[in-house]
Image (cartoon, rainbow, N blue to C red; front, side, top):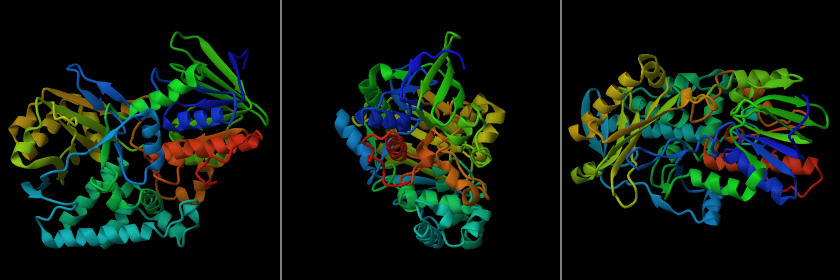
Length: 468
C-alpha cells in the first residue's frame, strides 16, 4: 500500500452521523482517531441545503420523534432547538381518481377499509414486537418469515383495496421500497426497532413529530467541529488492506492525489452495498459479501415545492397527502416555523422512483406538479422553486432512505451485519437495533462500534447501546 499520510489508532470511514458518533466516542476514550469522508461535507444522508432563492431545504433525514433520546441529547448539547411539524387541519387522500379529506392517521373515506387497515397495522405491529431486536434471526419461525415478503403477508391479511393502498404508501415512505421487495422478517425487525408502523407513519407522537430549526445537518457539523482536523473531507476511500493487527485505508483526494491512513482498527460507517464496492485485501468473508449484495438501498426521490406562503392552510389543510396512484406517495407541510414561506415535501419511492428515473427529470417534475395541483389546488402546481434530491444517483449512497433485506437474506446472513472482520468494525444506521434506518439509529450504531473498538484496544469503552 506504500507510505501513509496519517498514523493513528483507529480510522473511521464515513462522516455521517454513525461515523462521527463513533469518532467522538473514541476521542473521549483517549483514542487517536481519524475520520475520512468521500464528500466535501459531513452528514451523510443528512444534508441541509439552501436554494437559489435562499430557502432552507432538507435533502435527507430531517425529523425527530419520541424515544430518539441520543438525537435529542445531541441537539441539546449543540443548542439546536426543534419545532413541531404542522398538523392543524385536514389531510388529503387521493383514491380511485377522487379527492377526499380526512383527519387522523388513516383516511376514512371508506370506513370499512379504514377499520380493516387499522386492524392490519396493529396485527403487523404485534407480530413485529415478537421479533428480538438483538438477533432477529432467532425469532420463532424466522426461516419462514424470511422466505416470505411483507407484500405476501399484506395480501393474506388485507382484502380491501383502499386499506392496502394506505399501508403500501406507508411502507414505500418508510423503506423506499415496495412491500413485495422486503423480507417479512426484516420488515418486522425494522418496525419493532422504530416502535411499530403506527409510530413510523405518524406525525404527532411519531417519527415525523418535530424538525430542527436550521436543519439536521448542523448536528453533524457540530460533531465534526469538535473533532477538528481529525476529519478529512473530499477523500473517497478506494481500498482497505487489513491484517490481524493493522488496517491501511487508501483514498483519492479531489486533486487526484492518493491519501493513506494506517491504524490498528477501523470502523466502516457506510451502507453495506456501498462498502462492498471497496477493494478489500484480503477479500471479506463470503457471508459478509453475500449480505452486502443482498441488501440494496431503497429508491427514493425527495421533492420540495416552495411557495411565497403556506396557502393550503387557508383551506384548512395541513399539507399531508396519501395517494394510491401517481408519483407522490405522501407529502408533509415543510414550511419554516414562522411561516415566512410555504413548503411541501414529498416522496417518490419504490417502483415510481425507478420508473420516473427512466423517463427523466422533466417527466418526474411534470408528474409531481400535476399531483400537487390535484391535491392542494392549482396554486400548488406552480411553486416558486421545485427542488429534487434523487438519492439513487448520489454516488456515495446510491439510494435511500435505508438499505433493505430481500427475502432469504436476514435469517441466514444477518449476523454478519455487525460481526467484526478482524480489525474491521461496522457502523451505520443499518446496523442499529434501535431506530434502524434513522439518525437515532446511526448515532447508536456509532457508539456501539466505538465501544467494541475501545474494548479491543483496552481503553474505557462501555459507551455502546448495550447490544453486541
